[in-house]
Length: 249
Ligand code: IP8
Image (tube, rainbow, N blue to C red; front, side, top):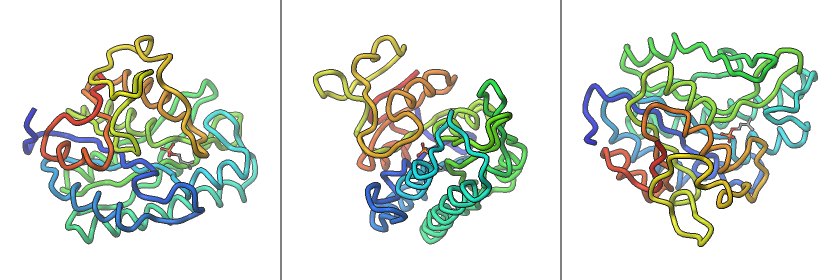
């Protein structure tokens, strides 16, 4: 598929792409700049979502908060959300420097989770930003969770909610791996059902409170649009309309 003006793309930049995952609150400036320059070549309507990396996940783990374990402490919410806003500022600035008309969107103020765990994200402002020619930049965050205080919303959940609501044509998830690995350690070309890969997808190897690769695959399978999982080396190809890494459809 070739990207064109009418194409709507939702792209996630994983926490491992924009931060140094093992050092608390540390941006990876070189990787972020490289990603931003690649993103700047994407044509059409574009929404960027970034993960928590060493900003969100360390604070979330410190306060015992995940996408199911909530907190009722306002200080915990401020610490997780505050860290994610700082990272969002760095990502937006880097995209802007690369020439992307990036604007920030903070999910804490735009989303809630129902008691059953369903995410409700208000996407009208994002659609209006796209209509006005901007590139909204969202991030994994904490959200009020009915009856549970506040829990974590992952960037992957946001990608799914945005892709559905905006009728995205293609979805990209740029993470630390070149694709989804099979049991032999080879990148799987295409995934059509979770059962096909259930034995192969393991948990993330660093602090990740939202489910690692298994959660990613499950979420992406629920989309209408084709999704691609790739690493930073595949980002240029994705930006040009190519199909790097693992296709999930
Ligand atoms: O890195 C999680 O987002 P993810 C965000 O996309 C926080 O799972 C606040 C931990």
